[in-house]
Length: 86
Length: 321
Image (cartoon, rainbow over all chains, first blue to last red; front, side, top):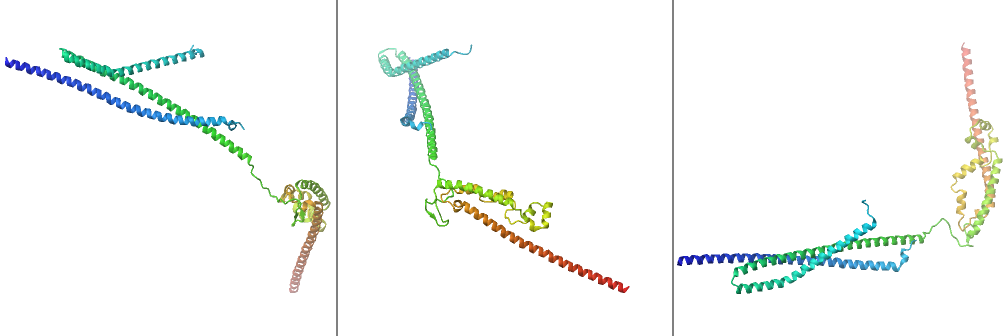
């Protein structure tokens, strides 16, 4: 009887250990996916930031050029004799 | 059937625009909803974790709680990944769209700048053309500008104004024509010279004239009036037109001022030169005549010598026989 109780205890421990290993595997998989998600988020943030920075730079350059054009057009419209046909 | 009226095309365009706007609105609504879900996911995950912890400690059926927790975690992770994927895709698309819009705007701005540059270049070129037309390049003619009224030591005359000079030119022109007409009439009256006639026309009439060269010889320096007018004037380096053109200077030459006197002087000089030339020609002809006479005498002497020699030979031959 003692042998049978010892065997059943050992089986139960084995089952519990297997379940524990399964739970650990599941948690490691979840954590791995969460890490991957976190890495993706970091990469996405970096790319988005760089894209936004380039867009901001382009918009700044465009704004300056537009300002220059506005000044030129205003100068030309202020002095219409330049465009008079000769 | 296939052709669409403008109203129908505009309607379709409006419908397309409306559908595009509706689509974009739906997409934006979905995006905002997913963002809200992603925001609320953190609190949901925390609340789910607390609930499963309590149920696992209190409930008897721990295995069921663990399995339910596993399913919830997997679903939450998948939902988070979906949310993050959609959000990142939306953000990426939005950024790309904005970058493309900015690139298009840069292209338009560069096009406008190029147009403005072209306009500025055109304006600058027109300005340069205007300025170059305004500044007239000075032209320097061959003329000597002498102040009016000052004496010119070389010519012995005084400078005259341009309008007076023009009057002089006109009078000079008339007098020059008169002088030419007189000169031509005087030349026509005289017979042409022997040499010129001989060189020009080797006709039998000239040959007959050549028999008496003194009669055909003329003292005129211009043997053929027509030839003189055509050939001599054509060869002249300063024709009458050039003379008139050169008289555009303020300093009037004495030849133009005293054209009649100079014409007469020129006529007298021409007659003198013609007489001198005729005298020289006469001397030459005399010498030429003397030379053939000498030659004839020499030939006669030689012939007589030969005849005498022949006579002597004949006489000796007769004596021998």
